[in-house]
Image (cartoon, rainbow, N blue to C red):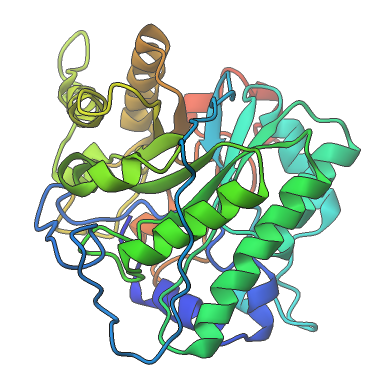
Length: 381
């Protein structure tokens, strides 16, 4: 979803090759967007043949599409969710030699032991040292979790940022090669095409990296973007990937859940279903995965959100409805997200970006997970 200004700064730091580049400053998506269906304009990396950065002097190598194109099966099964390991006091921007912002292997192992109790898959968004550490911990401890590993593709404004993307893809491929029993698929780029993206990249560059990854690996390869972009402009790219990853957030579309009835209403989940079907019904020959769908539990009064909509009670309802529908229609879904991330967004503690987790940042379960993880609840004195 659309990134806040602070997050954009982190991206620019990474692209400039700062010390944070070896971490994962884009480790996870955000839960924020404007209207998902609004203003997805052609002409900005949407596959219509235009190149917004044409004339910037950068070399743009070409790679041929695989001929004939043989789509690879997406094999992840079970329950899945997005994961980022940053805890309170940690953040990508603090990942310097003396910054203390890097999660420890012990912390990552604790997270994986929690998540493996209920989930079989996780999604990560970049391929820096943090993602490598997570995959390594899973592998060495024989944890039964598979990973959809992301290669973060940042805007290419100069030769250094272009090389940064090449390095990111190379590191992603290395992690996958070193841990073949853990990395099950690769996602190239995240929300680089939708018009409100703060990190737009021309379609031809995404196609180049998709082809590069597929040529170097036998894993299935996807691109993740907003559902409305996939519906309206994703036809060309869908011909080059092994599966589609779409994002959908009814909470950011001014949807609420009426809890006044004996059974809560289904407007939010019906919206999610409609988003998925609008893409899947167009692309019947390719798996369509939900890469992000979730419900925040706090907000700082964002105008895109119905007052009172974020809450643990409504998160629980949406999660239960989402899981029931996903199982019924066999839609592989990554719930956004595992743990709250207090480093995100502004200094306001109720900033929406911080509160999409099924668990609090201290790893205690929210209402939606209290029954399954009652042993992680704080001890009453």
